[in-house]
Structures are given as C-alpha cells and as structure tokens.
Length: 202
Image 1 (cartoon, rainbow, N blue to C red):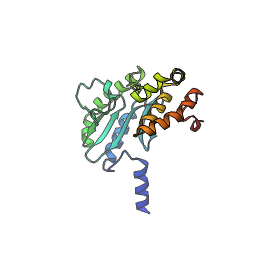
Image 2: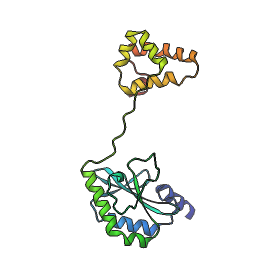
Image 3: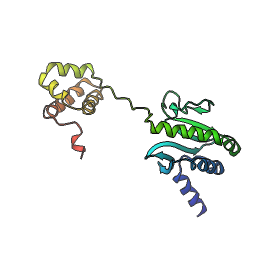
Image 4: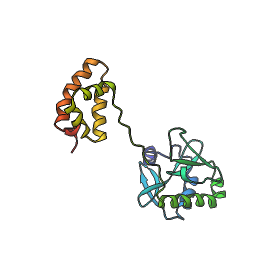
C-alpha cells in the first residue's frame, strides 16, 4: 500500500524527478508565496501564474532543485545565476539551480528580486513570440501550380496552415509516381476549396 502512494505522488509531480528536495521545494514555495503569483498545477507540476499566464515553475532533479522563469531571457540577471537548460533549443526559459536549503535561504532577497522583475516583465508583455512557419513550395508542387492557373489561384485562397498540409502530403511521398497520384487526388479538393484534413475538423 505504501508503495502505491509513493508511485501516485511521483505521478502527480513529474517535475520532482528525485524526491530528494522536499525542504528546498517548500522553502521556494514560501518565498514565492510572498508575491502576487498564483500557484497552479499544470502538466502535473507546480506552476506560478499571473492572470493565468505562466511565470515560474519549480522542480527537483537528481543533482539540484530548480526555479525556472518562463521568460527568463528578459531578466537582467546581474548576478549571472541563470542557465539555459537546453542551449540552442530553449529560447525564453531560464533556470536558477540550487543544491542546498541553506543556499536558497541565503539568496532569498535576490530570489524575490528576480521573481518581482519577472512579474514586472509579464505585466509589460515581454515574451518570446512564436516564429511563423514559412511555407516552402517544392519544385514538384510549383510545377503543378505553374501548369494550371485555376489550381494555382484556388491554392492561394487557403490559409498558410492548410497550404502546408497539402505541400507536406505531396512531399512526403518518396516516389515520383506516388507524388503524381497524390496530386491528382488533391487537385479536385483544392479547386472545390476543401482542405486536406477538413473532414477531421469539427
């Protein structure tokens, strides 16, 4: 029975991957509780929000407990304590890692400064904007558009997202014969203004 509850607890908080940091996690929570942020559970972990927008998260790992800032890239970080956990991939998220409860307690004032700056940035609307996907038209698809003006005109009426669905459907085919078969299938749909996956949308 005890093992069942342990498994359930781990399942409830997947960001506490070690279970080694209960006192450190509690101290971080107590510090964050001094601010206006609202504690919520998202994706099974503890998240702190402002007007339902993610600002902070906390989690325990094998070698450290982390306080992360969703848009930490905008923090001044004068103390140089923040790290990018996934360099080259993560754009906005930054972590502050701690190894002991004493370390967290020693930096409480600075932690609050960083959190309050994160709150101010959130209120100011500072956030990483998602990059717009570029619609890339392959030579094969472009040749079909060039050869049929009506097809090209109809294709232009679709949203970029629906255009990409058609393009990816054609380009996913490895053999030229399959590409031609798929092109014949989608042409009537395009001319009738029907998206490739419209039937699956409600």
